[in-house]
Length: 89
Image (tube, rainbow, N blue to C red):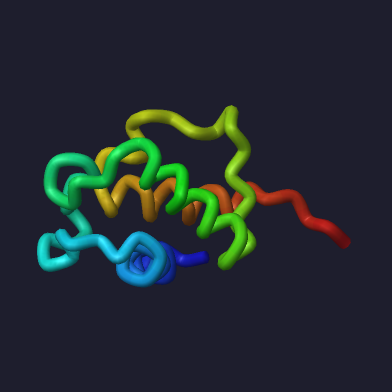
């Protein structure tokens, strides 16, 4: 998953799954908690959707608070997870 694909996936999940009322504030530098009003339960829903709908493996030990500061930091985190996934050949 590229960075742009990650941003798009985040937006789609917030729109369709969470039906977030603060999407008018969505942009790459939007802070997840302060600008978009995403709480910890909502963030878990986002992660679950990313795993189920987009097939991204997000190990618990890789989750760090800094990755969930903004749309940008989350998108970079997702991009990095895709690059470090082991091959299943």
